[in-house]
Amino acid sequence: VKEYVKEVERENEKLRSECGEMQKVLRGVRHDVKGPIQAIMAHAGELSGMDAKHSEVIEQSAQQIQSIVDDTDLYCENDHSTHGDVSELHIRDVVEQAWEHVTTNESEIVVADSFTVTGNKEQMIRLFENLFRNAVTHNDDPVTVTVQQHCVIGTTTRAEQQCGFTVSDDGCGVPDSVKETVFEFGETSGNGGSGVGLAVVKRIADTNGWSVQVGDSDAGGAEFTFEPCQN
Image (cartoon, rainbow, N blue to C red; front, side):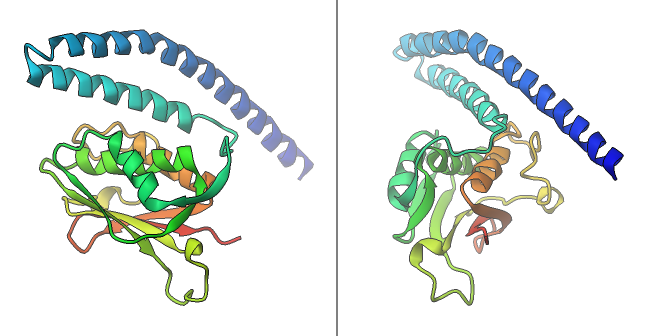
């Protein structure tokens, strides 16, 4: 047993060292791509008056690259801390801020209920932003994304903030073949996904005390269900 424990400790130390090296590489990549992304955005702005369509595509692509870098950076943080205050957040405020960061392609957002969620504001905005971007990116046509409260059956005596929430859309849904692995880093069903966004959603949910599952919405699209973790 002692030898086994020692072996586990050695493996853990090896993993910590490897993770540290990955973070160093990521910081270098983040620094190196920042300049080109800023240059692309600046030149896209200059072109907007001459060719608005192509300028918009260039700008959206640059934003997507920046988002992938940011998501990978967040995912690789290995201390699982919230890096800030945890508080009750009004869902409409969080959703509206997240929606502003997404290229929506004429998709619509609906907040069906008024309620609060508990978490770090910056991270929860990122969680919703990634879910919204996932819905828009993985559907060819505009979708309607709906955020609403979700209370587990048999918990009617709980305070409102202890209920969970769902984020659903009326798109094509998540294929059954990837539902069990959709939150893994690098997993994507195509249509331009990076395979990072939903992994970050899972990481943020875990960090802020939420469990998350994916299923089918009543409209036939995807539905992500978040419930408070049981202590």
